Length: 293
Ligand code: MG
Image (cartoon, rainbow, N blue to C red; front, side, top):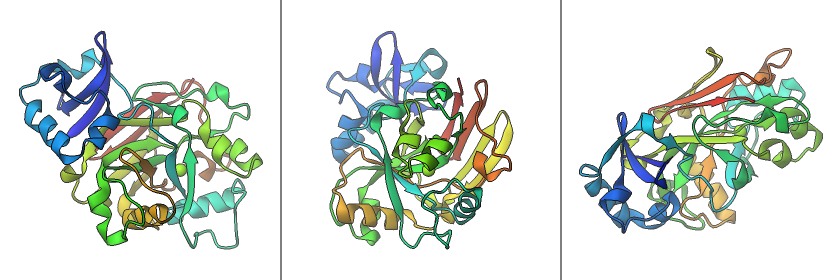
């Protein structure tokens, strides 16, 4: 099932994406959870009710509604993973922008940082490059895991029991802020710097996340092309690593890292400019198209 948060004249609510239409499950039953976070927290019984009702729910053409980020305002910061693809770790190392660089480009343990919930935007929304005083905005297409059942000290082999589904996150970054402030939070936390969506594909519908393929185009020019199988630290390892320290809760988001092909991998760097269009696609989730302003 493909779950969306959408908005029209009647307000913001959750729905099921079915080809070119959104099934308005809220209209079918006023008792539905009023947000994606509430739906996820409701567990398998609520998800099954949504699945059962979707077929008979009123259908709205996608073109007549606005898709929002599936979780428009996460309950807490988005967990992110740095340097989690070999070729990207190397391109970041040689770019000179990595203030955390060591002799070895490949990290020995997952690098975990976060983006604030306030920077999330949805499909089609604008990335405000004007908010970066250093004019060094870069894209990072990332496969993101949405946590269903929470937990602490989750064993890697039980990871699948804790995953609700998957979505796309573009970990937009102001490279010179990332470099200048050492800690990555400022450069990656600017308002609008986290396009997310267009939907959450539920875990049952993507039984092999490792086969998901990420591709990014800037103004039609292909920049990134990789599969989740190329991750250095895989999804089970990331869930085990984070939950060893921090309790994971329903609706938490883990962006798993970006492959090579980002703007600082080029000499000179190819930063995003106002007027550019960034298309981040992950098969089989869908794609996000965000203009840069
Ligand atoms: Mg990233």
